[in-house]
Image 1 (cartoon, rainbow, N blue to C red):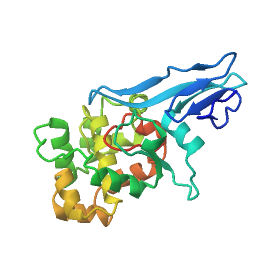
Image 2 (image 1 turned 135 degrees about the vertical axis):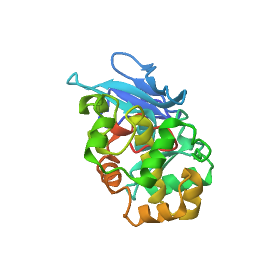
Image 3 (image 1 turned 90 degrees about the vertical axis):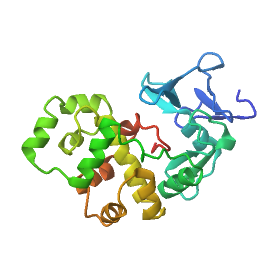
Amino acid sequence: MLQEDERWVKDYEGRYAINKNGDVISYVRSRRILVGGVIYDKQNNISKYKVVCLVGADGSQKTLYNHRCVAIAFIPNPENKPNVNHINGDKTDNRLDNLEWVTQRENVRHAYDSGFFEVYKGKVSDRGLKNVESFILKGIHDYDCRQSLFKRITGELLKDNHIPPEVKGLALVAEYPLKTWNYYIDLFNLLDSDISSTEISKIVGLDLSMISLMRNGKRAKKARRIYDKYKKDPYYFVNYSKVYHYI
């Protein structure tokens, strides 16, 4: 029997419930709160989203994000907004009061206004990021050069690390594919927001003219196509931990 602050998890009615604190409760055999797990970002040494593996009546297993279970169960979404935002910026705080449905633009604006963005400027000593910025500014279009940079990276390796296979065709540094993919996620989300080009320039440490060219679709075209293709695919955003998440 469901308790007062519980509701069934969508598609798992009668088996699993979610409460307003973000706990998933199993009603299979007996009532118990599931421990679940946390996606951990080793690169930034932080815990990210809480997840839980549920088993359907047919025996199939599926991993769900606690915050989305809470939002779907308790928060009306008449405008069918796609993203669930953590208001206080803590991705492991899945209390009902800390969640809201948002659009991509609203998600970016909230992160920017709340000061959650990590400013890249001043980190040019980081080899991976410095080369990413250099390639964006100067551009490398030589096919043989790109092949040389990525000769040790196969499509399978990229996929195993939740990086789109097309990334191997970008002018990036082979040792830092994930850092580069996350950098592009930050960059294009900012470009798609209503944040001014001047402010974006300060955040990512790129020249204002370059930001304007990117917003007009005249630079970083291939990276943009890859981002647009995968931005709604949760698999390729699992290692992303800057500000927001598109699942």
